View 1 (cartoon, rainbow over the protein chains, first blue to last red):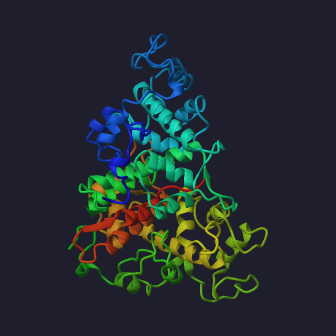
View 2: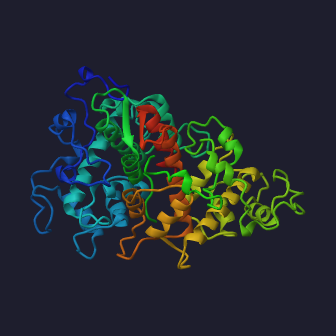
Length: 247
Length: 247
């Protein structure tokens, strides 16, 4: 048993899910997408959990007609958030518009997290814009991360510290070694000397990076030995998508 | 022989160097520093190459006194660039000040490249600021990248395209597979439909990422087989420093 995945015996059915990607993302043969792994058994089981509280009203669909492209039953708030920023009614929004749209339901996300979300949920035909379908999937994924954030922000500070991050990741099935968490969280040190804490957008970024890289590693560690072998090409093509992006 | 390192027999003594790090960076036992490998034989040989043209005047040192911390012989332009932004004369500059300082000798660097440079050349006692010694080493490293950039910007467009990038990396000893280069350069797609080309700062960013990750891979591939085995902790701790940074 490797150190980074918890023993399955300790995973209970009410474990909150690591937000999973829409089916069509997994179906793509998408060399650049670092999250393109099929959901594992744990993920599949978790897809049946009830929607988060903010999603009450989803599935009724009384306002989803009149704007094409949204799945039936899309919550009117989600449609409104999209419409508000899609001013030319093209049916697609870019990263800046996504940043504005999410501000209506969440806080203002930093552009780096926005780009990571865009690269995850992108329309395969247009890598720089997303449509209604992608937007709904992205919004739903963020709702799941929000549920996890609120559950592990024990002191209700609106921020997650190192220990809460460790517990949150453990809660969704990733037992991340302290050395890895320290490297990760050190990147958010603002030099003030204060304890490092993550806002929701940085928490989402950390969660998606840990989940994405760990799942990639697991693909090469089928026996869960904690060790994986890569050839140079696959190593580089796996890591680079997480690194840089256009300005 | 792996695919990513050229056969040594083809490396000639006038091969331009991959800019190398100052000795003290290599001496640090610095788990977070993705470039902390010892220079290989090729790098060591290349350290004896003549300084780039912009460095004429270095070594005379007639202006380097009067501002403590600069190595003897530091070019006065470099000292001036540092002094110009270190307004409180603390002897240390942060990322925004570094961005300003480099603008005097180069173009305006994007903040992402600045952060990569800061993480590479950081003062071990203060991860968010650098002093004169680090600044001089960083400036010199950029001079070497500038020489490479100008050599491989064959059409003098001031930009490097995919093929020029491939040739430039090959010229400094890295035979990078097309699949890897395509993933890397796709991150700079601005959606305009135009051919992707890199400014100098993005070229430096690409070069440092390729060099940093390849050298890390080589440490685990001592027989140059093209395959390397990592345990989970070292894999994550190696990759994460390239990924995210505070806002």
